[in-house]
Length: 563
Image 1 (cartoon, one colour):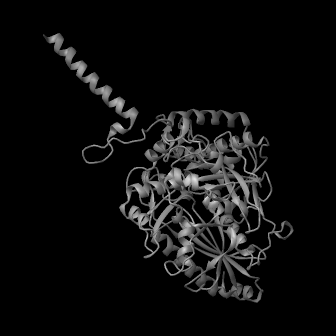
Image 2 (cartoon, rainbow, N blue to C red):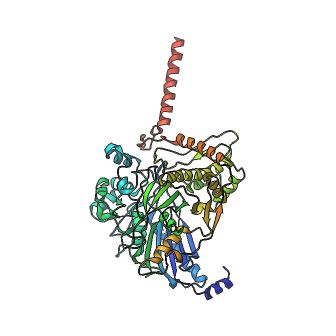
Image 3 (cartoon, rainbow, N blue to C red):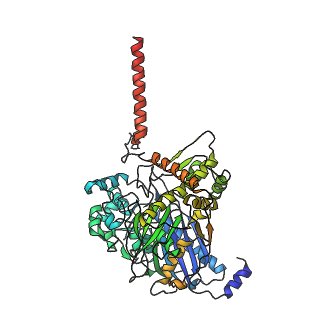
């Protein structure tokens, strides 16, 4: 925006402004919206470093996460000042976050006791197996009637159990009543509202519903679940609604402003897409891929591998709304893998150009099961594969196959959702970073055989939590009445290929998915250095053992002939 435009915008009387902290898996953003028009006025983004200490482990530094929030706030306030927008007009702040990611910190020192274990992390596979073995009939869905979730590496309770079992500092802090557990929202709200000097230890119903410790019917922590996982309830945050004043900012340029909205990122996107009616759905393409369908005030249990989750509770006295969710672990993360691990692209934009240059995968299929398979399979032993390769296959075909993989995974969860609801979706509302890839959006429409609708303002996750914060009692600068909601402009991608062609490609994909399964055992066998040996992979172990036996046998037969 140039100086003249900035001056003219200063002459426009802005209504109250609402800010959003959007703390995602790969980046943190701070965004400021006009509460009357839902217009995005300014924002700043900082990348977050992920570390992979061992195979399948994914961690982030809680202090870096917090520092990135402060940096984004400061930079955005500077940008607003340059635009002659008075930051004192910011009346509320909302927090939306990567869900399930697990932190434990010391309430007396304010220090994290370990890195944040990210939702994608697979280290708890053996913990999960042990927990499933404790259930009658070894049933991973044993607690689904209470939680809406299967016992899986994905959810916070098993990560917290691992921390208590394997990190001395965490165990000691729990024993001495100094430990606090939280997902990213709890960590940020506690720190921003004062930390060890009176910080508020809370979470909202949407984040709590992803821990496996929360009863989605009573909307509170469940003593039976906490006992099963061996988690003391005193370390848990207080569960609040998604839209109420939790506390006030205690430092920085925005000191004194209420934090009054909190939603897990996928719930925030559902709100930001205005999916308030039973049956409305959205799909978010971020690090992972998440399709949520609003099921209204009653939780609906899936028969087809989907999760039942709390969608939102927009006020202390408001009813909770629920959603069916299909979760895919690897979506945008496949772009990062192609860039950082294989080096075949230098940017996300290059992936689109590379794939568009061939327009086909030429029979190559990519199943990016880097963290096992999530919905609808819930198969932690799966691993990523690329199959259907020929001498003709090149990096362009692999790039195209990577984009198709995102679309096929979405089709799998959409099919499951249609079967559960009995009412097929007639179009798919989309958002998230990868929706800027126009080839991906067209491929998605072609593979689903329904139109894909993308809003022109892509920051729906941040918008959703800004709406919740602005609508909170005591703030009340954002109306959620249907007649007051801003009209959303959008772009539609229509299917352009024959449905039979789409079905053929999807059938080949399903075949590839089967090939990716049962790849890993749960407990790696360590070699002398304490590292997992090749025999921890059953197929590879059998192959190597078989090869050795053949060599010994061949040597024996050769000796027999010579004698």
